[in-house]
Length: 249
Image 1 (cartoon, rainbow, N blue to C red):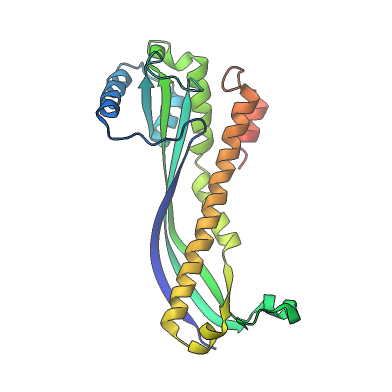
Image 2 (cartoon, rainbow, N blue to C red):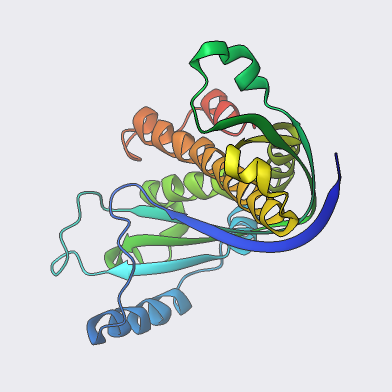
């Protein structure tokens, strides 16, 4: 038995919307729309303190469009973009494969009955959050932040810019990925190639981390959908007790 330790840095991300999650292309039309949106954003009134904090914490960018030229299924849409980075120290050791011991006669011919037990220690986990809020340009006036659709879209931002999310991600990674078991084939077990084992461990750590991140994003996506369901996409004001439940991470 031996123990190998290595440290690596990884970065990845996910962008999620509800109605139309198509990335803005670099076409001339898109550039013109971006420029127009920046101009309209400059004309917005000063937001209330709570909204100003959401804009800052959520890195919100407004994307205004002309309803006569664009027919979207929903008048407003907020897309959140999560990018994460982490440093992971990984240790592995050879063990008897727990699954092979329980499988008995059902063990495949290629299985060795041995596995790598990979221990993951996460460090410097960082979550970067940004949002793109698409709204009709006709809403831009002195009452902008008082309009129901705008309030509804910022309810979305409140969910995905919650300051507790980075801590939740760290907890999910630590709770679920403290140890990962990777069964070895006969050839892998007999090779005794430590560089190969290090690579297997690295891949297992990456896959396990990506799975946790996908589940983390799903938690936010589910709350986005629930918000739209209970408010009928912003038509009905959000009840205070429902707001507390949606923000209960």
